[in-house]
Amino acid sequence: MKKLTLALAVAIALTGCQATQRQNATTGESETNSATKGALFGALAGAAVGLATGDDADERRKHALIGAAGGAAVGGGVGYYFDQQEAALRKELLDSGVQVERVGENQLLLRLENGIGFHSSSYALDPSIHNTLRGVARILVEYPDTSLVIDGHTDSTGSDTTNQVLSERRAESVRSYLVSQGVAAGRAVARGNGERYPLCTNDTTTGRACNRRVEIQILPLK
Image (cartoon, rainbow, N blue to C red; front, side):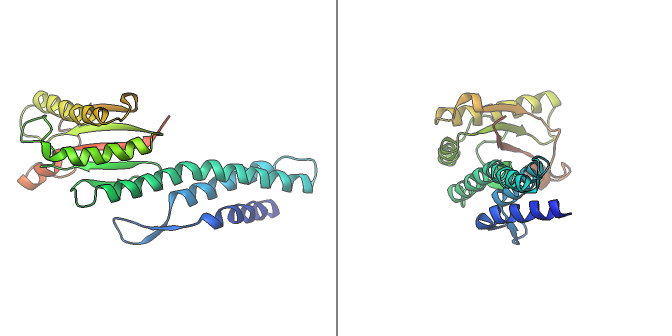
């Protein structure tokens, strides 16, 4: 119990100075940002490892401090990177119609909904989306330590084969444009999902429109 209390105290001391809040874009409520959560968990893990080593109490306390500091740095680093990238993308894409979603602690999702970027049944990028994608590319170039998975989706209208090909080509169109704007080609892969993963019902016009989309997942580099 004493070891756990010490680990917690060390972790809080090391992470308290950077504990900040952000507003959840969906609920509007305040929540602890990823950097703080990651640093706290990392510090706890590092302190616990430190406490398990050493020949006496003083040495174990020293090891706990060193372990907590190292764990906080590692744990907070990725979360902080994504916090900063998220803020930059939200600012860049304000009023663009492209949604920016936080998925878990270390993943972002950009969603180009129906009507943004493509004409019906076409995979050629509409010029109206070029400025938005240039903005996305600028932020991605500023934050190079992420990988991208670009997913194309369709509604259920048409054959499975047609929808699969259309979704693949739309995803690749977005990928190619981002690469043309300076995003490293090796960071990004394009995938087509056809009609397999609807967000909404395909029984209504509104629902089908919801399902016609391209999504860009932004993930940590492996």
